[in-house]
Every structure is written in structure tokens, then in C-alpha cells.
Amino acid sequence: MTPFDADTLRLLDEAHEVVIRTDRHPGTTVVIWVVVAEDAVFVRSFRGTKGRWYRDLAAGGPAILDVAGRRLAVQAVPVTDPETIEQASRAFLGKYAPSPYAQVMVQAGILSTTLRLDRR
Image 1 (cartoon, helix red, strand yellow):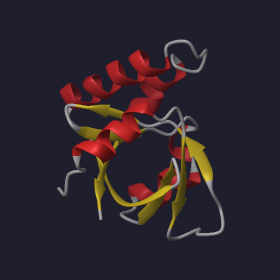
Image 2 (cartoon, helix red, strand yellow):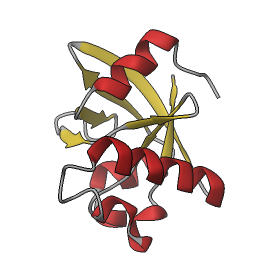
Image 3 (tube, helix red, strand yellow):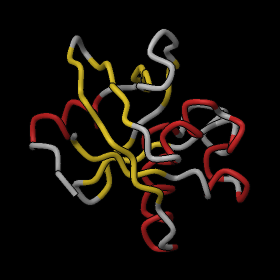
Image 4 (spheres, helix red, strand yellow):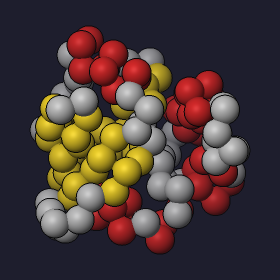
């Protein structure tokens, strides 16, 4: 795991949305939510396993996050540990509670799409 520095963690924590572009589909961008929990960065697919960006990353492909004018090269690691998934869920609910979509991001069918993003 290559961690993000403190400034990048703060930037991602404060960003409401980020844009992701996978190396497999470099011409397509998708706006996603991102959270920081325990100095780790997590994303989930709102569309579950149907999300193309999610499938690209879950298969081991790299991606670029665009956030606040910065491009961050990332690699995803699937999260299977229930405690870490719960930490990410709490972070999603805490950050996005005002949105009606926050509850969708913590539904059972979505939890398996939890990915930790590491620097590449």
C-alpha cells in the first residue's frame, strides 16, 4: 500500500465529488463520491458491480482521480474485511448524510464494491 500524504487526504476528504477515469476507458469520466477513514481513501459504486469504472478497478486496472485541479494516479484494492467496510460506511454516511443517495451507498448490495485507493 502506498499511502496518500496528509494534504492529499485532506483534499479528498473535503471534496464533495471527484472525477475518475480508468486506464482501460481513458476517454470516459465518471463523477463519484470518495471518503477518507483511518487515513485510507475509499470509493464505492452506486451502480454496484454494474458500474464500468468499478469493474475496471476491481480487475486490477489503474485510474486517475481529478480533484480540485489535481490529477492523482491511483490503484484500487478490493476491501473484504467487515470492520474496514463498516468504517467506510460510517464515513459515507457522515460525509454525504444530507443526500438522499447516502443510504444507497450503505446497502448490502453495494458494500461488496468497497475499494481502497492507493497512490500509484
